[in-house]
Image (tube, rainbow, N blue to C red):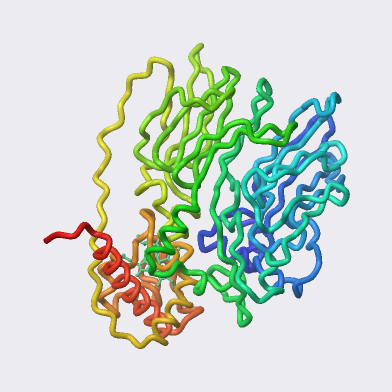
Length: 476
Ligand code: HEC
């Protein structure tokens, strides 16, 4: 383990990362050999809530920034900060594309990024000067970017820790665009962005304290849980979608879009043949025309796809390959929203295509879900409420918001262990399944606290069973 990782592991973010959280600290880099500049996209502040890292003050220089350094010497060249005083998990680690484009009749060497915060930035990559910044999805944390200062024009309500009030942010913590790479087609001049339209409730938590492990973000994840209310769920589901957006970085506007049922669709590949390839959360791998987005071809992949495709030539034959498989934060954390694109599961495969290819996939295994069959909920409301807070803080990021799980880790509402307090303690307190990625939480919670979580999940399972009954077709 290199020294820098040991150091990182000693921080809150490092602990979260060790727990299997995303490694979003440093993702994107690009290099311009002519300028000898290395461009680094920098991650968000952690904990998200700025109050708990720098007394709610300051820009927190270089967080959520693009930093250019001279590759030969490592010296600083310039930086542009997309989100000063970042407090919403708005990383700037997203894919950085370098291109030469004509703007106002002049050739410009640009750097383009569509970070989580929802704005599409075009910078002059020689000196970091802002050329343009326009939102590519609806954004409510800022009304725009001040072109004079390069700073966002913030909505004061967005600083939830200052107002003391919840802020439903669009985009939310999963970002308008996450790590799935976008693509640039020099012929049409378009950038193809795998965009998410998904909000997140940032709820201040005045009593928050860091813990030795777990999701240390400094907001109240327990209170942020989706209520067991059919209308609230319906509204959240309707507002949560995804799209492949063809963005014209010179005109700063959308040229076309392919709309998807849900967010968290795959990375994008644009080819010189005028095709745009992308896998999606609904389990399809498709090719679109770069010029207008018309769907030209698709393949049922049996699994959600998040990785970007690639293309290569071997012995005069062109191939397109994609590492199919479903994962990442959207497959774990967002509860009832996980299955917005349909029930998605993970079947990890490398799929390789060529013109005239004839291979077929084996039939997909059945999608099985254990029934909701919880014991009766008998615990006192304050016990259940405490369990909900602990669940939000320590469990929801993997087992799903409000204990509604996805297909990757057990849905605790449907778990056989729910009915068995002893085994529950062996797993959650003693670390029985630690070698499978389910560590012991004894370092942050007592056995009675861990039991409150079981009581909360029992309550949640009963609520959802009742909702299921209410929405089932009536029989006479
Ligand atoms: C970093 C991700 C992660 C977090 C956070 C997490 N779990 Fe898990 N949990 C898992 C994984 C992965 C498994 C499946 C392990 C296996 O396959 O044996 C699991 C399994 C379980 C099981 C066994 C379920 C069954 O039916 O087999 C229980 C119970 C459980 N977790 C409870 C909790 C509770 C309670 C919390 C919060 C205190 C929590 N987990 C937090 C990843 C996580």
